[in-house]
Length: 497
View 1 (spheres, helix red, strand yellow):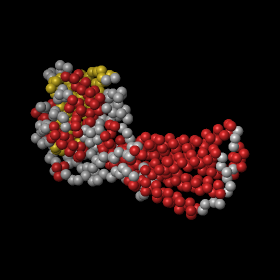
View 2 (cartoon, helix red, strand yellow):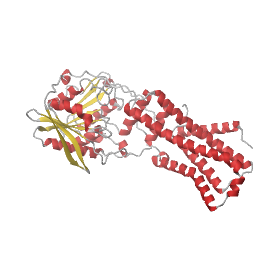
View 3 (cartoon, rainbow, N blue to C red):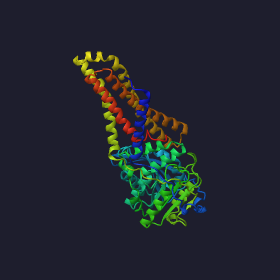
View 4 (cartoon, rainbow, N blue to C red):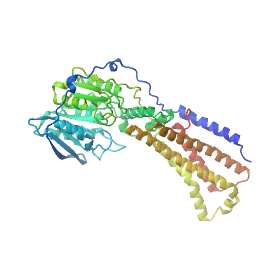
């Protein structure tokens, strides 16, 4: 007796509705609201002309490779020193996330050195910094070693040695400044000032909006982020920021898609007020991206001049005529925090689910091999061969579909992250990837329902499954069921698509 297509369609539809409901009702939900308009950011004064006056970057420069001891390794860097008489201000570059090669700072370091500022750019450490673990305090100590080295040089004014940090460096530099009075000033470029998780979630949301990605794609990413157990993602920047007593110069680009620059600015102002520090300067650079460049090309107009004039003018430039000036920033959505995943949806449980599913998929073949090795069950298998073959084919297809779904989800997430990091990509690629993921999820559901129906029909026609066949059926159906529940949590069955 075979189950009709109408019955199977109804069963598949009911299961789909149930799984879609799981995606809707289970936390955490992520839906960042529009950012409320703040009048203070709608009428920003233009940048004072004196800050962007031309800089004569013509001094001859001496370059020297340095190597300093640090915790667990040595730090390699490049020192650039203007060959002009007298003591000069000096600055250490602190990189953002990633490998952090000193070469990324070469254009700025060269310009500053030719304009009379001693600079050090160094390679980020490789021990104690990786994808999963990031100790911002350890990175701050590395920067302080460079500061102390600069203060020993006869060509350097020890009272004017500062630290410059970009992006992730915005979480590192405040720690160093709060820890040591040897830091004479702070320069923050595209400093998030919110938690890494909020910053990443905001950036991904902005990129997904740009790529016209479905809402479900955002939910998939944010729920995956909520289950990630990297402690540094929830780092609170405010305690260190609130202890900075040194002069601060902060740059934000108005086209930066990587940080919530309005909220980042508010957080910085709040921290400065809490620290009782009135020596801060915030400048919004027109057309500036995350690295203060225009679409990855030349530096935004006025950035290098403002930076150089501010450093060389210290301590006079420490207290500006106006704290916040420049182009008008527009931030559309709040940088909402990604709720932490409940215990049943954390990374550990997801890994356990995938492992149990894998065990279920291999349990049948392993049991069949053991039976053959013992010489048992052969007659039972032969008597059920006609009914068993189509069921076995279904089970094999289910295993391959599940593997394909897992691979496609990982590939899709990587695609979105790469598009976000590189500010690239096109909406057809995102929609195509999302369609593949959703179709594979629905195919897995259909295969589960039809396999159950086929096995029940075989039992009605007199099939007497052997023990290993029971193991194979239970393993594949159970493993696929676990993956379907996991897929439901991550919104792969939700509507609208």
